[in-house]
Length: 424
Image (cartoon, rainbow, N blue to C red):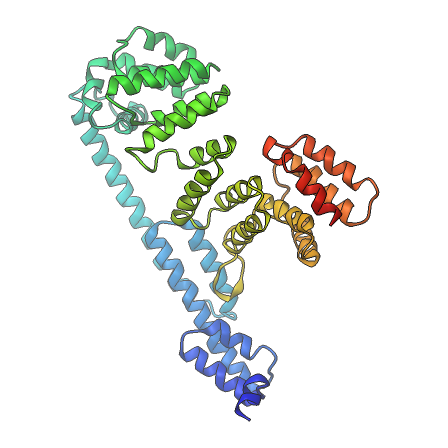
């Protein structure tokens, strides 16, 4: 009888379970237990469980306010409001606490900005003059630029004077031609000058010249460094990759990561993927996912790497994890971000290709219809072709071949595998 009542609990058993779950701190599970029960006792459990869920979200909102994350605060307050059943007193109290915490953050940020300005202007030996009240915005921009350079390079900025500051501000104001003329008049052996010349070259559409300037900046500084607008190794690798010199870009980042293991992680993974260094690419991506488990783009890239290696099922697992990570909230409500449409598109097509779970494929296609359209890609035609093929269209295979003709090389190489899957 004990086993039977566990498998097929009566209302009294469900009520007892629900009360125990509330006492143990599992109000969402308690709501599930009484979902189909009527009567005042079930209503009482529901009220207590919903109040507990509301408090969980109010506590979470305050915690995220302490961390300075307004988006998560808003999400948790909205969830709490859903559970409060018309009682807004707890919500008002929590909202007041949240406002006080954000006011505290703003005051701390303002104080830090004032201290940063004082410290930076002192660090560069008076190279930045006192611009007066009317030039506070300009002074702050220069202070931020100076702070962006490593401490070892900041003293040298004093010798470059106002001409260097004016050039950087002109570049930031989208006047790279004006900035470059000023920078060409400054010493060639100054690492910051070479760094900003590289930025000018990039803005003027010359990535090859930019790569040379970033390399010279690193040499003058005694090694790659993280500047105000990016790490020299990453900037150089991006420039090299944009001109088709991908193996050189990989070498640049591999050398930099020997001493700074986190440099350019996502770019490095993309470059490894592009050069078919798939095992190393997967390892880099897995390391990134451990640090940023909810970044769907990392799971999407991992899936692409696995697909390129012919591992369709592991690729699908990575995509499923990407979807799960965007819908984890108390009470089963979706999180602050909707599912990534690009993830849903690739996962739906993968299920159609695998031919193992057409119900899941249909579910994903329905989900995709409700999401904002992902960026246009060859995958749009590829997905449509798979839908046509699995629906029995006579031209489905021709459409698959046409879609793959516009795909990246690693996907085109999978054509024999895809044809075999389609005919299975």
